[in-house]
Image (cartoon, rainbow, N blue to C red; front, top):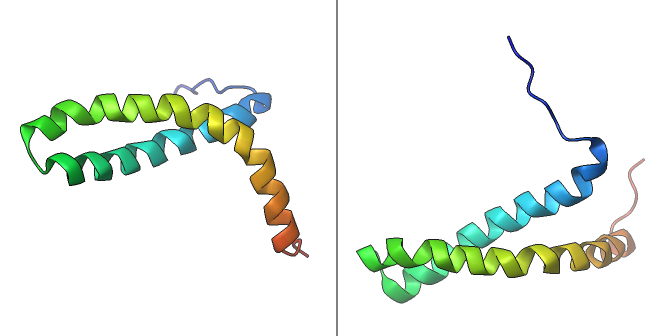
Amino acid sequence: MTRSRKLPARYGALVTPLILSGLMTLIVSGISTLRVLGPTPAFLQSWPGAWGLTWLIAFPVLLLALPMARRLTAMLVAPAG
């Protein structure tokens, strides 16, 4: 059995928002595009472009917003233990 190579731990701060923004924009752009175009062939043609554009915007915004969201969470939620 071969072991897959993993990124060093220091990249976790970038990989998590990359995956999160990708999944969120996939879902939201899909819902928005489906709502506008309906379940048509045009939907399948338009969704990848809509997703790419929203992901391009969402990833850097998430990188900037994540520290603020963590601070707000710390203000609202008691620490474990």
